[in-house]
Amino acid sequence: MSHKLPKINPTQTAAWAALGELYNAQKDWSMTDLFLNDPMRVNTFSASTGGFYLDYSKNLISDLVREQLLHLAEQVQLKQAIEAQFAGGLINETEGRAVGHAQLRNFTQMPQEVAQTLERIKSFVSAIENGAHKGHTGLPITHVVNVGIGGSDLGPDMVCEALAYYKNHLEVRFVSNVDGDHVHEQLKGLPAEQTLFVIVSKTFTTQETLTNAQTIRTWFLKQAPESAIAHHFAAVSTNLDAVGAFGIDSELVFPMWDWVGGRFSLWSAVGLSIALSVGYDNFESLLRGAHDMDLHFRETEFDHNMPVLMALISVWYNNFYGAESECIVPYTQYLSKFVAYLQQGIMESNGKYVDRNGDVVNYQTGTLVWGSTGTNAQHAFFQLIHQGTKLIPADFIAFKACLHGEQDHQNKLLANCVAQTQALMTGTQGQNIESPYRVFTGNKPTNTLLIDKLTPERLGGLIALYEHKLFVQGVIWNIFSYDQWGVELGKKLAVNVLSALESSDNSSLDSKNNHTNFDASTAELLRTIKE
Ligand code: F6P
Image: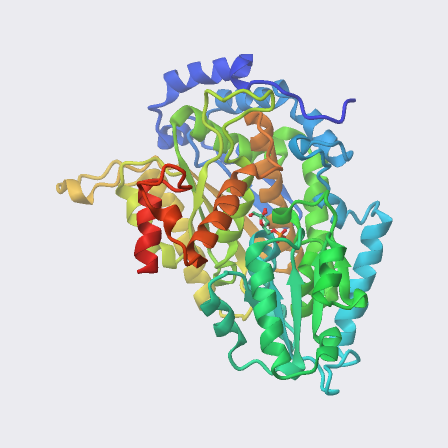
């Protein structure tokens, strides 16, 4: 079997044509009718795996649509694509790299370098926790600051927040934005002699992270001698030369690999802040839960395969119903950063307009992903989902058990979650309502993902579920999900803009100058900033 991704235009498949016909014939169907025709529909339109239960019956999907979606998965050779990824094929073709984030948690057959790194993380975390690793004045470390951006920030920050219940005594903070006010707010009240800074950058060239790291270094050296850096700065990177030049002791440098994309890296040493926040054992549980989901994804037939089913449903709405966005609503405040994390994962991966043959696509690709936690979201944007003019498929994520034992709150939380999906499906159908303003048309699709309890294992599984979902979508859309060239142009232009901003010579901003780097709008903005 070739370890490359197939390059099949999905619109050329027989399944795509059949789906188009089904859409034309069925698009006006109501979900309530689907349930009337098949009251046991939920048995077919659900799937489960260790602690996860997915109910996807409240979707505009008939048996025939489901069957053709599954055919589509076969006809774009999804099975082969999944194997190509797990076998280490260079499926990130535009960068010539393998895609190995699942190897970082492959406890069945772990690569040696990964196992060794986990061992290093384990002993470092325990030395920080038990005070064996001390600050330069001999005091134990009490605070940790993760300095990174994008994948070197969003994943660790989201997971630390999500697992707050499992936290140890260390206080963990995050600095990401190049906005100097961000770093200074995070430095406020920090005891320099008891703080560990973890500089996380796969490339160690990222402007934001290096700028923040330098500012922190300068702040630190106002309170400590140069020799103290070795006690207080750690790094995670593939770029060991640049890390060395920054002055970080090689003992405290943790590796990254080019076969791990930034947005999929929290399972690697990029997750060091997670391990420091909740202890190594919980970090390993997170990885083990993800590994369980990897096995489910790799081994389960597509008709019961959660990531595959969720991806197919999303493709159905995106490409046939013309839905532009997807809403994700976790019913737990612990997941308040989950959607922002997924936005990078999904939109950086699937926001592509060129297919794997190098041709411009003539169909829609990546969805816009948005959302926030329930029940808060109900009092914010739900109005538009219920009564707006756009079709917005939504994922409702809920945990059966709460963590602090407030059963009364938990019942209300779950009741709201379930009531919303019911309201979205049935609306006020069958009721005699006089005011048009009070009518809910219903027929709004939702998936409900019920998980037994928010543990590190389940969180790992949940993140892996969405990682695999986005990969399946990318395979179907025939795009390369694992590169991110779209973020490069702005980075490059920012260098020119910065030098114009910092220059005392304003000739490059003169619109009469034909050699100016800037269009008239950009030049005017820069002139206005400099006034
Ligand atoms: O700008 C996008 C990006 O390259 C992301 O893909 C990545 O997660 C982030 O920047 C940070 O990159 P690095 O870890 O190399 O600093």
